[in-house]
Image (cartoon, rainbow, N blue to C red; front, side, top):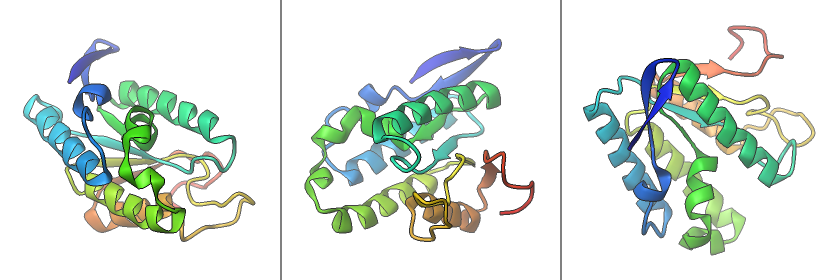
Length: 172
């Protein structure tokens, strides 16, 4: 873990290259991130966030991933907590994962299991990016991974923070 300065307060961050070194599948990611969360809490982190959002819907996948990575850093500094995001994870290990060779119909449910496991590993806050619950045409999408993450967070009692400025407060 690398400490990261944020307005005078140290915020623990995950060194994804170190934590995910040698990981070859989703189960390995889940175990490595759970271990990193435990270690951050042992070092004094009281809150750990997770940034959830749709990738490749509003923009090209690469642009959405870069936006998510930037946003996770900004939220970490603003809220003084480490923030985990799928973009940070997959940016580090995508090419090495067994599951990336699977058809989407097999990969998608495994991805839901992966992120449910991460949420269950000690995440205290979930941040929902603008458009997290919409498909490419702007319609509600109950099959999206981010919607499933929202449901898991609600079931686990995780603090839910909607970052969509178009949604009236309290409308989740």
